[in-house]
Amino acid sequence: MKPIRIAVVFVCFALATAAAMAQTAKPAAQSAPVAKAGAAAAKLPAPILAAFTKAYPNATIKGASKETEDGKTVWEVESIDNGLARDLVYNLDGSVVEFEEQTEPATLPAAVTAALKAKYPKASITKAEKLMKGTTLTYEMALKGAAVKSVEITPDGKIVPAAEGPYKKLADIKIGGDGGWDYLAVDSAARRLYVSHATKVVVIDLDKQEVVGEISPAPGVHGIAIAPELGRAFVSNGRDNTASIVDPKTLQITGSVKTGENPDAILYEPGHKEVYTFNGRGKSATVFDAQTGEVKATIPLPGKPEFAVVDVKAGRIYNNIEDTNEIVAIDTGKHAVVAKWPIAPGEEASGLALDLDHHRLFTVTGNNLLVALDSTTGKVLSTLPIGPGADAAAYDPGTGLVFASSSDGTLTVARADAAGKLALVQTLATPARSRTMTLDPKTHRIYVSSADFSAPPPAAPGAQPQRPQMVPGSFRVVAYEMTGAPAR
Image: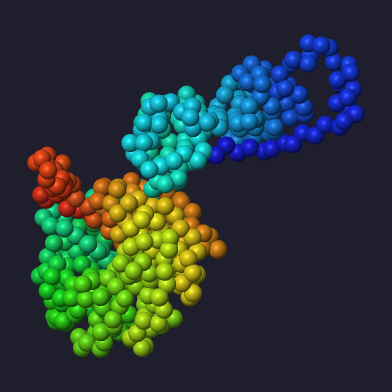
């Protein structure tokens, strides 16, 4: 429920007036409901005051204001009752339009607390409110220790979907086939989406939303990098420790470069026209010339590298190091690590995004956080809880929105203020296990890889539980679009 807009009117009483009232009041008036006292209550229309007093005889009205919208007039009343806040909106006839009523967590219905525990077993309630709009009654709770900051549940224990945000589902783009997936990459100018899948890269026309080809073979494919000005694409092949050089027009492989062990993320650095592969088991970065394929350097890294981003103007590449809980800064001219920054309280970073204009890094972590850092100093600016199993981050310079995709079926949409403090904009529902994502900055659409999974068979006594099995042919990309015009 959207916050009720309350105009608070503070009521002050002159001591002389109060004394006079006490002297002249009849004995029966001393037991009258306190809601009837004061200027805030006095200015309410009689039907509203009567309805409020009858429903809440011991409440104190702290403020009241009239609001007219689309020709309809309502009164908003702020009150306190036994130390708990209650805000109401009334029609002129005294009927209630909506209310928010602070509630002690211990008094919540059993079905509500049971649903909360089942969905967020580690969550604790920091604040609870009873909400009513029209005839719909729900309970909203602010949470600590959960993937979301708040949740709304009906009295019978049904979780209400998150409030509408700027994004909604656009389409399923069917791909099919078997096998897992990793990164996606957008070539916005060419209107193509590259999707890693099993031992190939599937290529999708972004405007037609259909598959137009594939790059194969790509054994153990992880990532795709695009060099638009060179007319080249590059693919990291984790299984045979190579990077493929690809002609994006024909989708043919034109060359291969030997890398370190298990190349994962791959990045094109346009300042020096070089390609970096970040080698997971090799704990290194291989640097090669994007035009000739010649290896220029192998950069030792302090641990297992994950995703990386580039700031050409600063001459730096930033890379997540998963097992040391830090980000390293690589000087692109020296081919050397020049800074190491801890991401605490974040742990086990994977996805990474960069806001070039405001010099901010956004990393997603294994302990369910989106972490914002200053890209010039490495200082952690803020954190925001996200869903578990996050593996990708994105930043849209056109809207100022930050994205984090998680395997629990949520995609966090956030925004950072001038100080770098993150705030939740939307928790977008996505298919379970949709943990990788990319963004098209031209249309502001986001794309996640997904598939359907069947329940695993029961485990034998003493055996480890089996994982859910991917439904054959169900692999797809799900597209999401903004519902309104982008705004900063």
